[in-house]
Length: 249
Image (cartoon, rainbow, N blue to C red; front, side, top):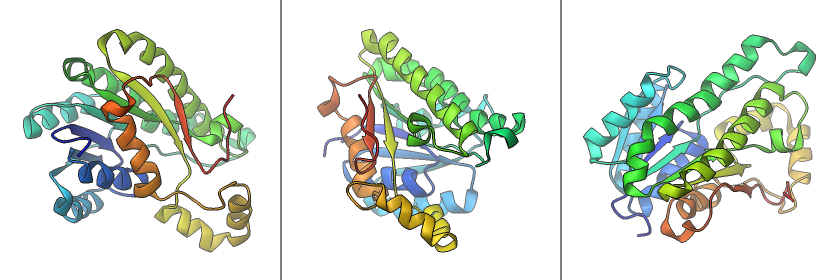
């Protein structure tokens, strides 16, 4: 049990990659708080995952800045502390750049970048006290500049810049701050595959390992590593969990 008695917050934990990470952490002994805006999905996921360990669901809209302190407070009230913060949630719209409006940028930054800022700041004292870990999320959309992803890529690269800076600042507090850049097979990807099978096959052809990652087995296990003492000498790094699609230099 690499994470025995550790307490983790995972935003967007009711489905997809967040749910896979929650399951992976629970299996390694962590107590997990999943935060999501979808009440039905959150409650269903909490019931499903309880057989793996202690899990608590918080229904909050992370785009509301004040909710960050409320999430941290409820986590401490429920499990007594906080060791791990995983900022996974993010929403965006795909459009050509010339059609991308301020509202599209606001959606991406208000659900991805600013919640990451707010939750990191709200969690700082607990993470400092417990020599904690932060995992933020990058994307190949930003690193490689994928077309039709201007608002998403901009927010993801802002998160990367923030993460590197905070990793340097918080190193003196023994808080590790890293990024995962994933490609994973989720319900959303499945829906896209059914609607656009040719595009899906083209994407798979561009992944050297020839498949999409599994949210628990591939992405979740890397999150476990980055949440454990096994990664105590790693900070400020972008870990590409994408089957070899992007090679950082």
